[in-house]
Image (tube, rainbow, N blue to C red; front, top):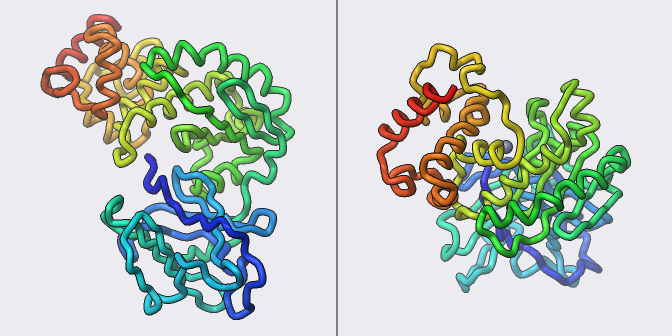
Length: 363
Ligand SMILES: [Zn+2]
């Protein structure tokens, strides 16, 4: 999922001290919340947790942010404890938070976002079943290695892998950045979690299927399961550096499209498998669903319930586009988020016909 709420600024820099007992304590804020942009229509999650006695919040694709609800023992000026209290006189870039406590815990909240930046507010509702999981997921990542372009945070089980992984990534870095036409790409943090539950918790998808083991969290952060553990689950996996390279291409891709857009699936996985890792098969017709040489459409890739076609055919789509239109057209397609007509100058129908011809001739 592409960033829904980057720039979620709710940081009050002064430390909380001397707060009156009349206000809820920080542990009463802790929990998982189902969040949406309309009341009672949640579609993603937020985790509020304590780290070294301080409160932090995290939303999908965002960074972990400190939240200090009290200043000098009173609620911060951006915080209200009921809808009736809400008094907003300026509509600048300030974010306000309305909190609704029931039975000694935060039950729901509303983030009032500046209308100049967002058309809607955010509405969060406690997910009682996930109370236990609202923890600081980076606690086990006690090791840190920093190289020229990457920061690795990981637990003890991955210590042995890091030097080799880091040097492989650094070797590929400059060439990749250049190929994508970028100059300054900020350092990328790679957080590697020691078990599946912690990883799923870290990416706010508790209980996700076990094949979900890594993702580009944001333009400059990758979150993934330890490949030592992934190997135990899967039996065999690709080289760790190659897997990270795949996610790093996603980071580059994200940096090239507006925050408000969800990347097009075949382009998203196509670029990452083509330039990063890993080509699944040598011919698209080796894939079980494609043996009959049935006409492949972009829509059929999009609608594939196994999600496999995005990877399998995405690779060959990018190969075809590069060979026929040139690499610059691939870059242009990223920038237009897959707009075939605009970037390649032909209709989707004609593009699909030519792509099928290409596959039939070459594979
Ligand atoms: Zn991917």
